[in-house]
Image (cartoon, rainbow, N blue to C red; front, side, top):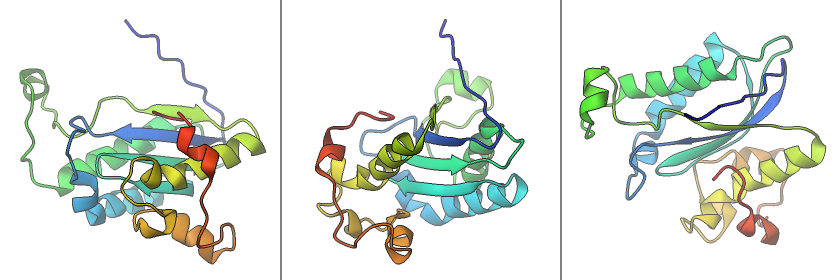
Length: 176
């Protein structure tokens, strides 16, 4: 049995990868991007956090969040986003007998991958990785061409030039 060890740091910044259960050929997240955005908005209102970076790909998402001081409960936030998204879209997915018996939808993988950001360099590496991910997965050839990313907000704030790319991000295996 896996031994999941999570680091809970109040007010910490974290990198997450959250995957759909069926990844191959699935476009659910971008087809229902408004439902996902609303799930995030409601969760953020109910359980505050700062979105440092986020990218939504067809079948998975990467995000960097910073929790409020004194709060280390990232799991409830991820769970709430998943549940709200599940409730917002029609139940058309294939479900295993186990999921049916447990009353579960067949949308998300049960677990998610998280990494505590340890320092500024770690933050920058993951920040770039999040934004470069659509190029890495060959959805676009330029980061700026992917619409479902905080990259555009970062360009407006002067954090990236519009034509930004990073050669070494293509080989990174962060969060996969």
